[in-house]
Length: 131
Image (cartoon, rainbow, N blue to C red; front, side, top):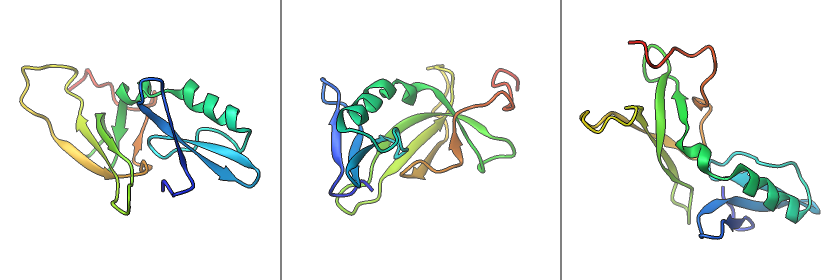
């Protein structure tokens, strides 16, 4: 993944939004993290699904489980999909809340596509402002 029959779909500025691949007589959209972004549908609807999803959500906080006693609040630092037989990766860093005076924070390299232990935050997650 992505496979040779996956067609990259890019914004007007050439930034990759994801891929569209055939499924039977229809098409499925997949975002840059490797998540399905549409049901099997018409080509233009698959494109619209990727356009609607965009990539701004990559800047949102995420939660990484399994590295500490409780989930870590992280930010996505890099996304590199599989390419030409080279495994992709997702690099996240512990959220420093934009504090440029802090020393570099811990980074974690995860497999691509997105593993289940990297997920959006929920109301049940710890408050990141409480130490």
